[in-house]
Image (cartoon, rainbow, N blue to C red; front, top):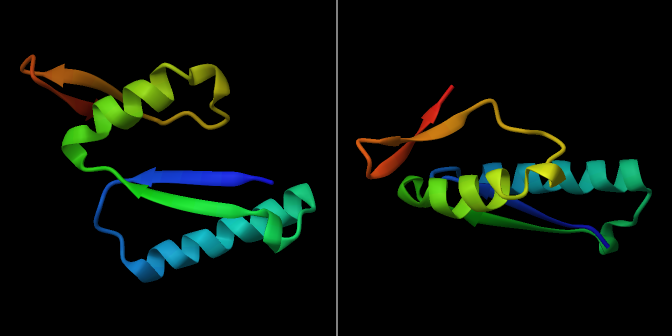
Amino acid sequence: MPHVIVKLRPGKSEQQKVRLTEAIVKDVMDVFNYGEESVSVAIEEVPAEDWAEKVYERDIVENSEKLYKKPGYTMRRAGGSRHEPVV
């Protein structure tokens, strides 16, 4: 019963989110041999100003051992107050 959570910054269209969901469901069905009824997908929009704390630190840095695909960026503090991506 896979449940996939996609976190991204706001701005993608509803059509893009539906297409992504359909692709994820298809791949989960193909790879794991599950029926469509077994797969669920959630999309969480995270504002840019919250990304470092709510996604980068919590989901990526603190859970790096669980990542199967790591991002090609890191984040550093900009002026001591907020994080910005470093590629």
